[in-house]
Length: 175
Image (tube, rainbow, N blue to C red; front, side, top):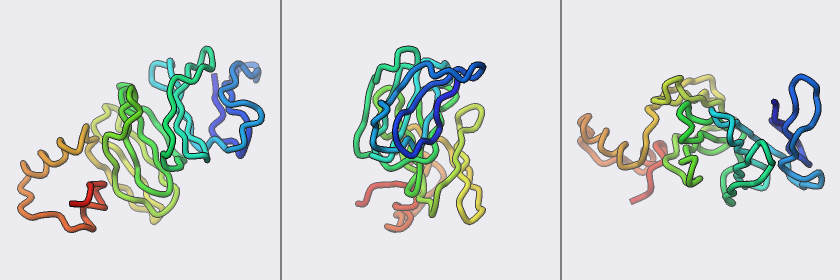
């Protein structure tokens, strides 16, 4: 089965890849916003969509039932589930974000990007690769939480306070 990856406006549908038949409509035909990113869970039991209206939605792909939604998220142009299915990576013109896939709550944000990024999980889910518009590629550990990141920094001899710019770069809150 296929799901529309990008639609400027209107429906998001799941299609039968062999026949081209539309199987399930996730968003109605008169949906006024575009779907900017979509991803299947590794086990195929859920789909997450992000739309231009800055709402992230979780769907049951068999029934088309909306399971959850979160308003006020950044416009996403990339979305990918972790290999274990417990986290969702998404991003766009701001940071790359990682959500807990059950609660649909942010776990951590990675450094800002200048334009539409490409990001992907490592096969074992322990790292995230982010390709920047300027051609740089960076690989970051897939932190489970801000607390875990701080513990890692302390363990690896960070002997000074981070500057406000560094805190922004690593998606940390201001002090």
